[in-house]
Length: 232
Ligand code: ADP
Image (cartoon, rainbow, N blue to C red; front, side, top):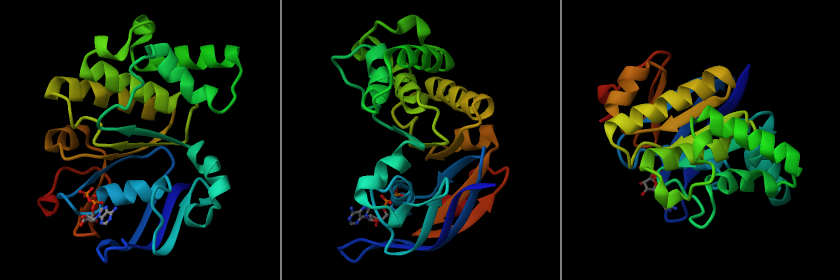
């Protein structure tokens, strides 16, 4: 079963730049997919279209049965509930503890206190940070902050986790820790993961699916891929 289906998608920005040309892609449930390619190849645009930050100018995007481009603004929450998103710069609330940062994602959708507690503790356990729940973000290392951001993204058990350069600010050791956490979430929770990265070592070590974009076009899609020359 495909969780994501992209059919003949084009994205042309208002300034006339075409970021994505005629993209066709299917991503199965439970897959772990890297998106690689040079700067300006369309990676972020692709991710943004998946969470409806941007709309395609042509074609169709289906995520978990929802026709993303056609969703009315007031229905976008239906899509967002199927998704978790992790960014390069963590985006934690500095004045909130680890627990509160993760709980916030559930409070905004009106979850009950008991349910919040169970889910937050489980998510923090899954990222190896249950012992730091009372800490504030500025007392944590970059790798730990990113793990909090991952816990926040998975706390409501989304079908799809989108990661835009999640290791971009981290050293190689911390990056590999993050990758182990993501691999674990993919295997144990069955969450489908799409991750944009520039990191050649990570892609080569993990041996996951690899989508390569070049100047807005899909030039390679491998099941057990490595960082290939087309990405440079
Ligand atoms: P990548 O993530 O691979 O670096 P992007 O998706 O950010 O690539 O960008 C692809 C192309 O689209 C680039 O030429 C970029 O300048 C252009 N672009 C990205 N965002 C916008 C925007 N909001 N408005 C206009 N052009 C954009």
